[in-house]
Image (cartoon, rainbow, N blue to C red; front, side):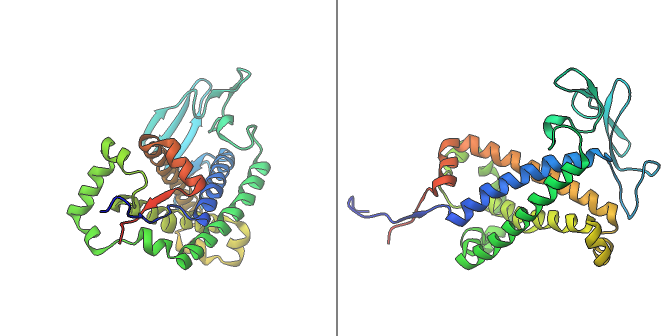
Length: 270
């Protein structure tokens, strides 16, 4: 390539993508923390239409006078000091499922938690809908997330997975196009997990349940919708932790700067 050849560049992240990314990050943080406040009102999960204290819960956070615990099926894990039984900033023992530093508000208030949750749920829902429409219009999804036929081959997926877990490859990947594992992850989050959060949330709404009762039937009952809502939230937290680890390993200042300014992506010269 000639030394004076001009290498075309373009923004790595479009403005709509960046705006949605930061709005989405804020909404999900508030939704998670206010959701934990709502969960504290009844820290048990069931399958089916109904669930109460005397019914079997597949997951529960509980406490005794001196111990907190998390129960998954028949497995019981002690969580004293973190879940179920913990001390607040004044040294007082509290028995809410999740501690105050993880909830909005930090003191237990189901009414305030619901207000925070529902307000940011609307922002989150409209933001996701706008992002999907804008991404289809700008061809962001077709251009950056489309899986080509060869990318579905097991050998290609395995090679992409190994590269994605290699520290050297992670550090060299900043600014490059998404690999197959990244594409599948983003497709799963944007088109499966996030819509499922909205759908299960609507299913639990008393107003929606009264007008569209078939929603609970589709998910196997109101309590099943609540369980799926919680499981989806856990998967989103797991995705966030992996995402942040990748950002830190590949160069946090460069990655965060690109998501603020748009960054640049080098295109092959003609």
